[in-house]
Amino acid sequence: MGEQGRRQIKVGQVVSDKMDKTVVVAVTYLKKHPLYHKTVRRVRRFKAHDENNEAKVGDIVRIIESRPLSKEKRWRVLNILERGK
Image (tube, rainbow, N blue to C red):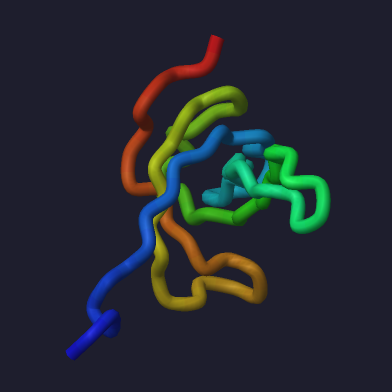
């Protein structure tokens, strides 16, 4: 079986909620620089489906991998972990 049934889950911050039923989630991770070995913060932005438009800018959300929902949407909002200020 292997990795076939496993869906990735990521935690990130909502940076945009201007679209209908869609939020942009910025996921931050740390990566070591290949030459200088300093830890560098990297940010990756994912478009995630938010059916009821519940997530707002600043919220910390958990997103899960899903089937393609549009040209760029491949994630769904699983739950809101923390409300933004």
